[in-house]
Length: 465
Ligand code: GBH
View (spheres, rainbow, N blue to C red):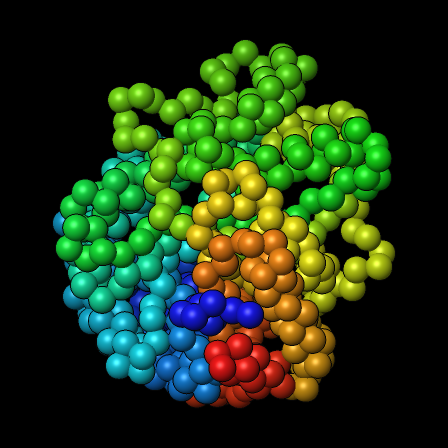
């Protein structure tokens, strides 16, 4: 059912697993700053040590082999490689760390997929305006080139930026992620815009300078829920579902895959809501300049992070403010028949993934798709025999199989989130997404396979024969 060469993976991110926050000359990132403040993260926890993968990466490798993964998605820490964010000063110990890890994977015949940016901006660059500053695009490009140059002989699958939506909205509007800004209605669009500019610059650099020799692929990682109309026969609900997807997936995928600009409906909603609030400034949703490298066509595959689904209806203007939430004007409803796993936002809807995959095939030019994240959280009393999560993976993977065989979607790979329990951002260590349990109270951060990990390994094995 799965094509030959299908990527079976698991994913992690630097800040969520590495620890070693001050080890060997690593610079600070915005998540260090954010967590070291109070009242932001569950229990005021942080990623100072986390799974300590900075020292224990060989333990991670054992987990990867135990699962029988063909691929492993990791992220590199910008501030570990370039402590001040620029190539003026390179931290060679950081380079060594990722060299060991990448070489270790390759020696074990595991293909790395490397994300350059998974939420952890060097603090030094935040101090220069971060994602709100137009300068960030060139700075990111410099960092990306450094990584292509340093690791690109061995890494052939790249993600520039993970979930620009989350970074833009949760980091700059809701303030629940670093850098913790609460500037509704303006900053998220600006930060998102600069992320697209940064991504496009890096893709063009790769394409013209590195691809001829390195022959790899570059994309950006996009998250989206699947949104369905609450009432399938009601025009307002259908429109709300379309708006909802346009404002999450479309926000970033439309410019890259379809037109080189944001979805039309984003522009009209943002303008209309601005007028309603007598907003007189420049367009809150910036325009792409013709003098800069084009953003259209800057993805060699589609990287999708899917977790959950929503039923939606119109909010009917009730979310009355100058904010992204009010611009999109959508009221979300969780279908009571959908089970909620550990975290409140994660309703378990495996067939939503199949529907979203078809949507992507239809709207974004039938691209090659990697599902770069999908997972299930456990909260509360620890269950090593996590039958629900095992069932979740089984069902989800069977939906992926149907997408391939029945809907003709070109899915190339599937990465479970996550290899092991780790620092779950604002939820700290309270939510466990791992296929391996990590004992955070023990100095050795012992990794122990969950029942779901064993079952995932079996699924992979079965799919390959
Ligand atoms: C991924 O984002 C991240 O890439 C990964 O690092 C993370 O560990 C994983 O999810 C699990 O969370 O609390 O109501 O504001 C997934 C997309 C979008 C899901 C924002 C959580 C927050 C909903 N995320 N959403 S709410």
